[in-house]
Length: 99
Image (tube, rainbow, N blue to C red):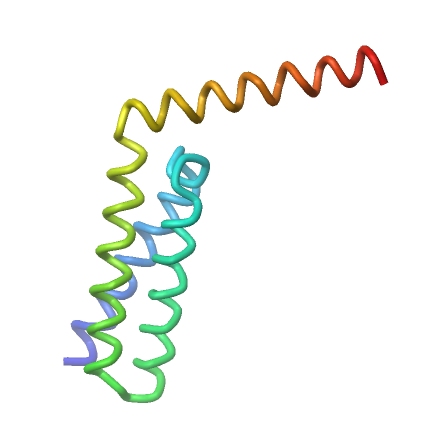
């Protein structure tokens, strides 16, 4: 059972790494951090030999990772993030011109 669980955790870690390198890190950073924390707790539980807790925390991490990805795919959220980014760029440029 632990070999399968190790594989699940490894796949989840790869998925979270990919999310951290994508727009998800900018559009759903809080949810991504929650998923990463749950993965860490799952890995700690696995190291202790607490397979039941490791499975539960892996499921939590997977659910939170899916939510983070889904939030990234939601067009209103993506547009709002782009608008905020454009405003930040404008304000930075303005502060450089008028220090």
